Image (tube, rainbow, N blue to C red):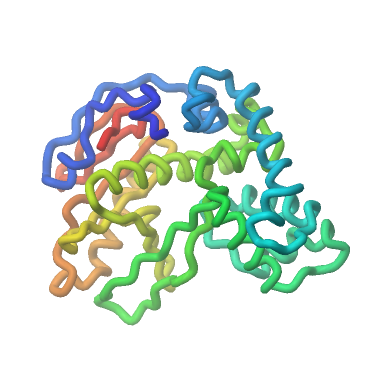
Amino acid sequence: MSLWESGDSSGEVSLASLLEGGRCLAKDAEQTYRGIASLICRGGWPRMIKMVPDTAQARLRDYLDNITRTDVSRVSGIKRDPRLVMALLGSLARNEATAASGATLVKDVAGAAGSAPARSTIRAYIDDLTRLFVLEPLPAWTTHLRSSARLRKSPKRLFVDPALAVAALAASAGTVAQDKEAMGLLFESMAVRDLRVYVQSLGAHLYYYGDSYGLEADAVIEGLDGRWAAVEIKLGGGKPVAEACESLRAVRSQIDTTRRGEPARLIVLTAFGHGYQTRDGIAVVPLTALKP
């Protein structure tokens, strides 16, 4: 469930309205880092919505244990090494919301396997976890560029819910809140989870953008009519939000809009603060105020 479905978003800002040019306005939800960390760790499973994060995490660790011991082998029809599966889950969790290379994952799990496994083995295990709906990769957006930059093609690997990444790391709301870098990636994962739900209801698809010049957009919404919108995801704060706005403007300038058209909207999703829009129309909206 998204934050809107679980009742943790006020729904003051509609994504559909933003994409149609509607104004962005929402009051400050006055969330805390610990509050956001708790939402991340609790997850969006309907039966866990009323649980405290520690209880939800205990259930999710049991779930991952069952997956490593039985489910991965069952779905593939091939005996899998539980230690390697758990080590891979931990590596994927440490690299949540990134396009970590196969070499990075192999290096991370080499100790658990006794020797470095083949990349084909890692790919097979990732395929198994995707079939079990533990992972849900975010594909790269392909489009026409004004420049000679090369587009990234590898998908970002994300857990279907960031709470699973926390469970794979045996972390807690307290430890997540203390690690700002990790929390930023986990918040991005939660935002992508909610965006997937919202764009699906709008008949659109979700991607990410990255090129060889280092320009990125954490998410790109593309409708069936070809219209698109770029999204940056930040925990919040004046400087990070300003940098996110500049990054989105740079992405817009990189796209060949004569072939793809101007973006329907540029959006910065945050964890804290109020919803507003910049003078040039970039919407800055807390995830806890967003709905489809």
